[in-house]
Amino acid sequence: MTHANLPAHDWPVLEPGWVWLCGAGPGDPGLLTLHALNALRQADVVIYDALVQEQILDWAPQAQHIYAGKRGGKPSAKQRDISLHLVELARAGKRVLRLKGGDPFVFGRGGEEAQTLVQHDVPIRIIPGITAGIGGLAYAGVPVTHRDVNQSVTFVTGHDQSGNTPGSLDWNSISKGSQVIVIYMGMKHIAQIAGKLLAAGRPATEPVAVVTTATTDAQDVLETTLGTIVDDIAQAGLEPPAVICVGQAVLMRQVLDWQSMASGELPRNLDPLGRGRPAESA
Image (cartoon, rainbow, N blue to C red; front, side):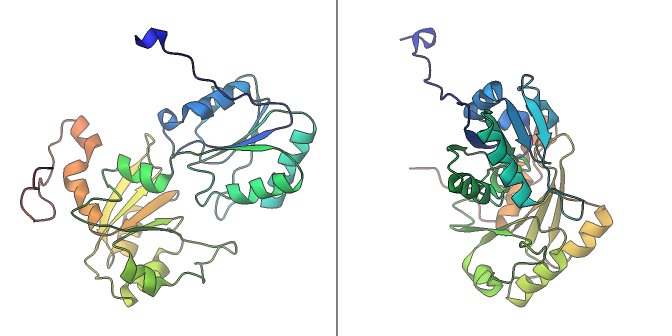
């Protein structure tokens, strides 16, 4: 059977009165899923977050675009107001697309919004997206898992509902139990987070990557260490949004920085782990 003769996908229909909570990926519009694109083409209203690229909204010219971004330290809509606005739009018979950066269920408050909708008898659909803690690091050339480096990875948030470092996190256990730690929204409290990890026994020389505005043309990557990260971020003048990766996997950027290679640069180190050439796969 040729590709031209393959049956068409049975794409879901966004019905009036429904709300689809959809991940827009970490930034690059090309990382949008086909289900997300299908939703954009059907929506009457798109309520989008601060990290959603304007080019993505171009795929929904027929829809009303409503900004509902929440950025730390800046005036933002209250989460309850956003959730109840979704309910109101759905009850008005609109086809509603709630477009959220990354994945709606990964530190994106998607679960809270979905819960409110269900409590108000509004039917929902969840469309996952590529989360910045994986996709953003991949664009920086940092694999969150590598069988020669780590068999565990922990994703944590750098702040809780109050805006402070989460008090519920057991940093000692995280430090000892996870070889690679990926921190979302950690720039504001990086001094406190780094201090907790160092106090828990992580070495000051441990590699760290800070990726800002991941997967976009404005992406910036800082390679540093746990002991110098605070000063290095300040010196580099980096600003959120950022994802921070702590662990030996960061060293793989020395050979996997594919964006630099696409610009003609050679890998800095073909054996960043110092373990010799990898064995051939069985």
